Length: 107
Length: 145
Figure 1 (tube, rainbow over the protein chains, first blue to last red):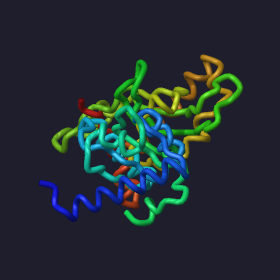
Figure 2: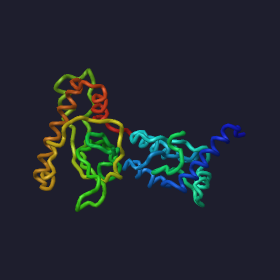
Figure 3: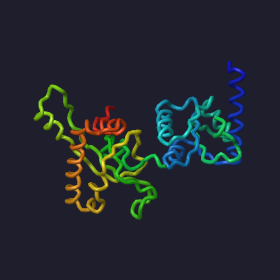
Figure 4: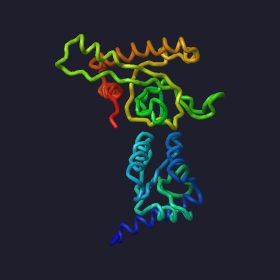
């Protein structure tokens, strides 16, 4: 059972993501996220829980090299896609511009 | 600060040299007129020097170390995986871009590279900073997979 505190953190992450989608710029999808990491355009990376381990390690390593925070989203790729307001799944998400949200400063 | 920078050790992911380690000599972030994609010039080890142990005598060590074979290549940045290691060899003087066009001169470039790499390989103890020593030792070890 998801504890109340965990659920609250999750909701706040979801609401921050919603704000980023509305006011800022985010890139969904592994290939494009990795490209943004390589070009140092990314400010933060979110990884879904059911992302394959190899891909997760790869993205984490690249984020470590680029000095970018990695957030392991508590939810699978379909939940992450829904949190972004999209009708598809998203395993890796890269935030380029946070807009009005405080996602970069709070986590 | 891009991830793939001059001096970084990278792993080549595609092509004939897939699975080999290389050092980035120069990056072309915006591409150039012929290659309109982000690419870099790397100098790597097609063959790493053979393993040596303490029991081997000097002549044998030299012979086994000479099996190191370098390569030079322009690679698309997507076909390269950066590592956290850095090798501080000044390769820009050794690898001159105009020399790479002419095949004869390219052979000379590779010969010079072999000398440079061999010198660094044999004198790994002289590299002072621990970070630089780690980078060199990582570079000369074959990636096992």
